[in-house]
Amino acid sequence: MSAVYTIEVEGAGVAACSDAERVLVALERAQGLGKLKGLPRKLPVGCRRGGCGICRARVVAGQYRHDPMSRAHISEADEAAGLVLSCAIYPVTDLCLRFETSQLKKPNQRND
Image 1 (cartoon, rainbow, N blue to C red):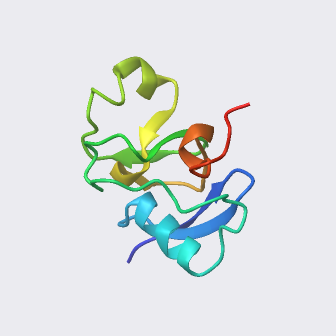
Image 2: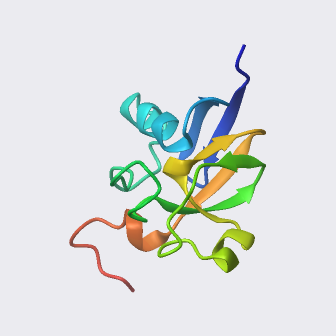
């Protein structure tokens, strides 16, 4: 039987995620259900396999396990600092994530 954890996206809302589910998948579902209303636009999604780097996020709190992540996008130093690809992580506790601000800006939004 799988455990279910709460995934918080800072300032945006929360999602439920089982320990057998990739965090990005749970966040996409939650956004589709209107539970991540604080995001200015759709979640950053690319290959969903840990290779493209689009879903890069910082784990602010909590523990996770992960599949391989491209070292071109997450270096060993990045990983040690809590940076991950959200498509490649699975929760083992409740998590709090922060997406990079530039990833969530609207296409015509300035970078002031």
